[in-house]
Image (cartoon, rainbow, N blue to C red; front, side):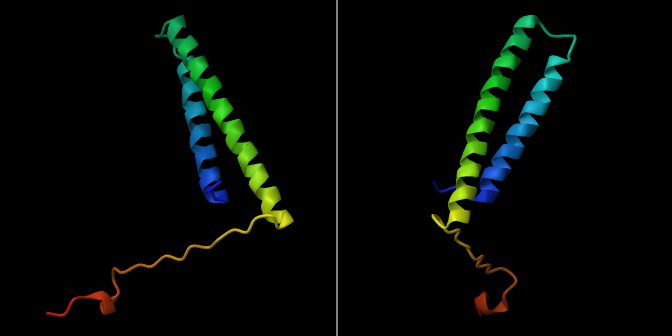
Length: 89
């Protein structure tokens, strides 16, 4: 598992937004029942994906708190706005 707590949380929030907007589509009166059926199928897939990510997040939390896994901190190395990286002409 190469995911971080933040990346999993981000994916869950994106899926939740997709579910919200798909459910809005179900409220439309200008679409066919076939369209609504397709939307319901998509919502089912999104719910399954969300559940999988929630399970992965839970597993990661337990692994971290039990000491089975350690989280790494990746430092940012930014070069812009640092005069020492400017090429002198």
